[in-house]
Length: 169
Image (cartoon, rainbow, N blue to C red; front, side, top):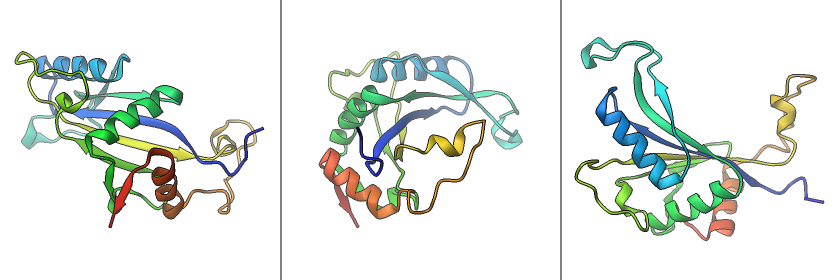
């Protein structure tokens, strides 16, 4: 049986913000599918910004959520692009972390396609312990005890140990 204090990767969200609908968004979706091997979904604007020509409900980006083994494999590939180094400010107080990849061609096996262009992406990683479902379930949901939550230092230690990543101050 798994240890209840064991930290694991809950999910990895890979996001590409385009800022507009149309051809550029389709190309961004193609890039995400090539990199993650999973079908992306569109993200829409929550509010309108007149100066940028963005209306509420307009598709402005695309994202993919990876879980389980796929998430960990992708994370190993993405961290290798960053030379297995992350700045300490990438971690939030709950131990989750985010970082960016400047170009999709940095991934192993990806070649530059002039038709697609250059697309960078944001990668957000959520960590959890077994039992966190208690806070999200519909029936009899309860808050997770503060002793069971993941701290920033525990998140950093997990990334160092599990992925062999150096966290730079």
